[in-house]
Image 1 (tube, rainbow, N blue to C red):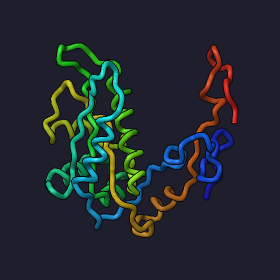
Image 2: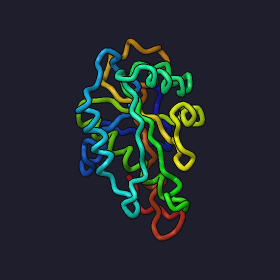
Image 3: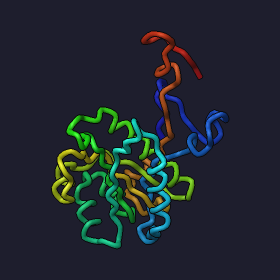
Image 4: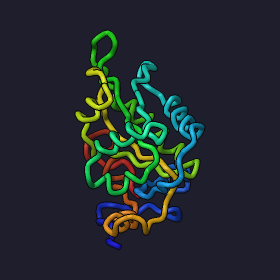
Length: 208
């Protein structure tokens, strides 16, 4: 296992700050999914209700989620085909893909500059809700957004932003060795003094 960079800190269940909720401190975007355990509609409803509860600028809620599962195999196949090959290696085992779409152009024609931020909040709610229910969930930027737009008839004022794989954890050994190695890598983050500044750019506010 490779050592974390000296510019990063490793987060584990033991070392995570006790003031941070364990659900947040230990969240992990896994690539490991059980292809033989489908998700019920009730589980998916809980994930989407979590997204519904997210805050947004002026309460515009500028998010749309396209849900792909085995109830519509052709659509799921097409969604998987939009993924980059490196993601297909593991994400094709996930029983559900969500395509997160931002409404960047308002109905009145003006640009919503906060749409991507707001969609990110809704996505984080989905990730945390999934982990709380014993599921794995991993967002992916590696997909062909234009292909998705064409396949799924997404209007021009909406922007496909992220695919999210969701499912029950599987057996790590089912994955190629290179993916297994990625899964075993330590979870690292920048130290606080690299991204918290006091009053002006570059003046560290907090340290570990």
